[in-house]
Image 1 (cartoon, rainbow, N blue to C red):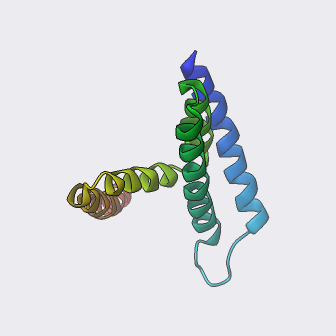
Image 2 (image 1 turned 90 degrees about the horizontal axis):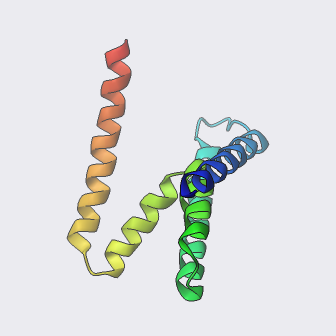
Length: 119
């Protein structure tokens, strides 16, 4: 049943992301404004949801639907932000910095490799 909640939430999140990108439109400067707004909004919302779920002891179903489903479909950058924050909160500074560095450099490098591999 958990898969269904993630599936439904993912569809909602992806639809919200698409609607927001249409509403914001393209930036004349070339800056990916809609992606930036989606990412930072997702970080705020996942922080709020994580805090509320911890404070109010929400069931796993709500967290799966909201955080993995809706926010996962909206932006996975929010999960990245929350995981970094939790590592820092737990005094795992080196792990947090390694996570950020590897995610960015390896991820961006693999994106370039994948793109150029096809060309």
